[in-house]
Length: 452
Ligand code: PHE
Image 1: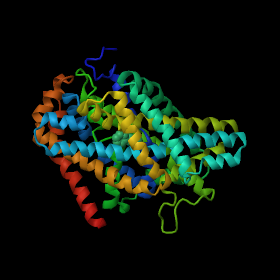
Image 2: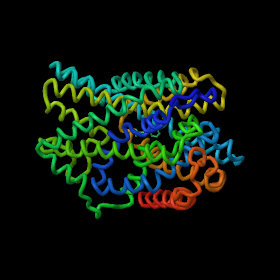
Image 3: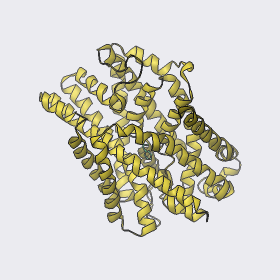
Image 4: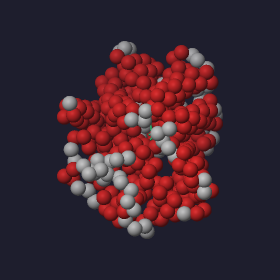
């Protein structure tokens, strides 16, 4: 059902539009690039198990918290904290959120650029231009990385310029379902390939003895990254959310959808890694650590498509990388929307100028990363693995002890009439007040302690 925007900031036109846009933010390189890579580094199925556990125990409650803060204040993270508490400390937390967004987007555009390069790799390979295919897929080429990152950033900015329902919502409505269909078909194909069985086993049969603090931290970082939590992306998206929507229900859909896609991506990529290994590609070194690092999926997947061969290979390979670019796009727009809405709301800069300014600034940072891709792991560790859970911790503390859960309840009750009789409320309250902040800080502190 379409409704008119209720104020000049814009709102989502339909409930499905919001769920798809938030799911679009969640589903991205985090699911298809980051999840399989981190899992391959951290013992397969055991990682999957801890990851799913943390998604529901920490991720979902924090998502409800972010959406309710956003819808209550109709503001960006900095403005939202300011509006709900006079404590200046939380303005700093808002800035931390904005900073995480800027840092994550600066490497995100590089990986997203690779998805564009590999789309062309597939095309050139099919046409028989092998040296061109090799050139375009050289992810160590700083100039090429810069060019595709700028291309990707320009598309991101152009969608942001379109505003909320026209730009973001329209794009995701049809692209998300298409992605799911392609992944499903690819999984079926991979299952029939030699070597795939070992990958499926590694993915689904957990060896709990490999669980250690580092694995748990990695899984927590992955949960926050993948659900777009801890940096106010969902505070910002919540700020465009209609008062009639049921937040816990919408958050449930988004979480379920995100985990579902990550699971499917793992189901595609783990067997593909083993297939590639069976064919002689070196994935792990003798010490058992991953050789490819962030380039993993870009090493194994093109092999899969070349293996399919001919036009079929091109159709699947080309569409896959195209859809991956699009999935990255629906996430990068949410990453850029956070600092952009901050500049619009707090400094009264027009949307167009704000998006260009911030987008341009982030592009400049990303050029450094384009020429030294080893920076990706470090920035990712500081801002995704540590930064996002830290942001999530502070959001829980803010909601529970400064804004107060009773006020959050008034916000959540809009669109959720029977909140008083529903089990959700008492359970969520305990999670947001105690379980989530304590767990996050325990995992963060004990791992960092064990590393140093
Ligand atoms: N969740 C996105 C992905 O999986 C990345 C992201 C992180 C987006 C944080 C917004 C905020 O690719």
